[in-house]
Image 1 (tube, rainbow, N blue to C red):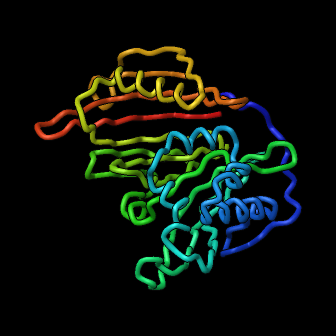
Image 2 (image 1 turned 90 degrees about the vertical axis):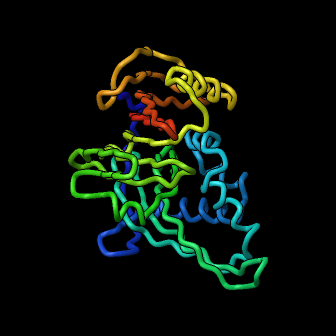
Length: 277
């Protein structure tokens, strides 16, 4: 996959939060300001830290748990926000950081003290002199503890097994009514994702691909297909699409394979997606 450009990263000062987890100070400061804005529901300030692709991702995410984070200020009188870095991987002008946001406050309805812990993965990129959030997601650490094995991610419930290439990092993304398994490449620019989603109505894989293109257009982006053709996934009929996604000055290259497995009581969509900017 093509990378748009590279800016050399000079690590001058680093911040250490846990054993073997070292975060460059300029990235830490950016994430602190970004997370403060997110937790307080200050959307406009939060957007200032997002790259065009991250803004696109937030629009596509809709009202999942990501939105719950933005509404924490409506639920609680916020008292404290603590960050616990879990991992940090830096490559040239990019970095992938996993951290826990420990949010403490008073429930506005019950008056009780509450604490929520949100594990997030932030992929950041340096553009000029400043870092911006390239993509962001909430993770499911409980599922990760059960499903991530050495060299493999296994979801027995949905019948999925995903090998983890050497040097890649696996994650389980928190999603509404779906299972999302993802592995991030060492270049911090490429990710492979498998999604399992129960379909509310009967659809074809081609119709789902077409709906995705229409959704992209509705939020002001464009999707140009390089090819679309029938194929197989796990021995089942599937639909393969390669596209270039453009939003403002940013581009995202994607290749996805869509497969629907039907039973007496449900239709399950399985999607394998490779994405790189």
